[in-house]
Amino acid sequence: MGEPESPPAAPAATVIVLRDVADGLEVLMVKRSAHGAFAGHWAFPGGKVDPGDRDGDPDELTAARRAARREAAEEAGLELDEDDFVTFAHWMPPPSQPKKFSTWFFAVTTDRHEVSIDGHEIDDHVWVRPADALARRDAGEIELAAPTWMTLHQLSVQPDSSRFLDWARAMAAPNRFHTRHVDDDAGVRVLLWAPDAAYDSFELDAPGPRNRLYQHPGRWVVEQR
Image (cartoon, rainbow, N blue to C red; front, side, top):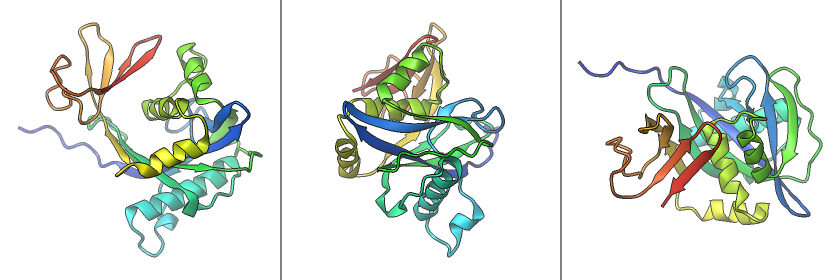
C-alpha cells in the first residue's frame, strides 16, 4: 500500500514590507491573533488566495500578488502597488502536515509607515530589524514559523532594502522551499530543502550539499553550502 494521500495545499501569499532607517532596514511584522492558522505567531501580512483574487482567470502568480496586496490592506492598512512586488520565494510545508498552504512570498519597499491593524486576525504589529526579531525568538519572546525565520535570516545580512530587492530580482527563479523533515540522533527536528543531500534519503550525514535548518530548542541554526 502507498502512503495516504494528503489534502491539497491551499493557495496563499504574503508580502515582506520593508523600509530603510538610519542603521539599515526594517521589516513590518504582524502578530496573529489567538485564533486561526499560526495563532500567536509573528509573521508578515498575508493569507489565503480568495475567489475575488482569481477574477478574470489569472495565472497562479497573478492571483497570489492580488492576495498579498489585499491582505496588506486588510491586515495592516497599507495600500501597496502589486506591480512593485518582487517575487521572492515559494513555500510548501511537509507532505504529512494536515493543513497546508502553498505560499508565494513577495517583497516590496514602502515610505508609508503608518500601520492600522484590523484587530481581528491581527492584534499587534512592529517595524523591526530582522536580526532583532531573530534574537527575540531565541530569547523565547516571540514565536516564528520556519518560513518567517528563514526570510528574516536572509534579510539580516542585507544592508538596505534596495540591496535585498536587487538580490531577489537577480535570482534566476524564486527560491522554492518544499519542506521535508527528519529528527537527528539527539531528537532535534531538521527541516530539509532541495538540493540538500538528505532531502530524498533523510540521511543527515550523506555527503553533498546542505540546505537545512536545525530547530534546537533554544536556537535555530541554518546550514547552507
